[in-house]
Figure (cartoon, rainbow, N blue to C red):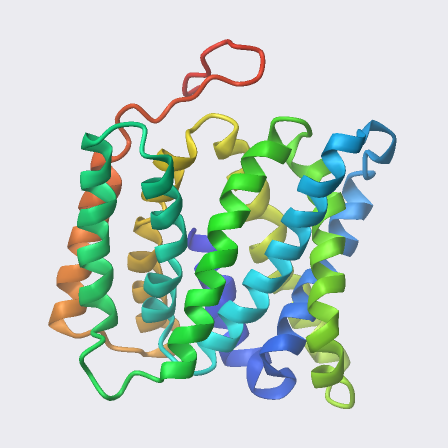
Length: 275
């Protein structure tokens, strides 16, 4: 989460103003795809017919999630964008509802998200909010499909398939935006940002989803708005309000409480425990 938010902040400050949100998403994902293919050969021969739709779905969801989130980031503060986007994992947690008691933690996190977004203020850009909500939809789909794909392929090898698909998805919007503005310095910055997101953190997320239920994972991601707010303050000088700080406390508390009962049984049936 720290790497993702740092990569987002650097994208907002260094790439989005010149390449646009779509161009930045396309550059990040394309460079990430090149890196992943270079270090891990895509397991094309291991793909079964039943794997095709989850792999395609995960790639497309990743591409759209990246484009919409960066589009939101161009209009609203980083912490607020992440808080709205977090509604996607919250929805996954609520739909899966393994028990009535488990719903209390997403509900608590939702209150924190509302405090962080401060929807009653006129200063919030409605289009930015919409883009963040669309990114949250992609994030929710991403969580479900990442767990499904992660049960079949190791993290890096799965990403060597899905990230190129995500790059092609982002190219539809990103290439027209970036044409004429892309320079070698953007590529050099993009390589560093691509390592921060998607290469390393997406591999870590896939490893986490092999060990956690989607409900536990989704609610644990409640910490991400807090990280986004702190990174936004340090890197982009976006100062949070007191209500946003209170919202941070609530989502972090919900994330901590949701850790209980979050282990899952993989396809083999053996209970996976933290190592």
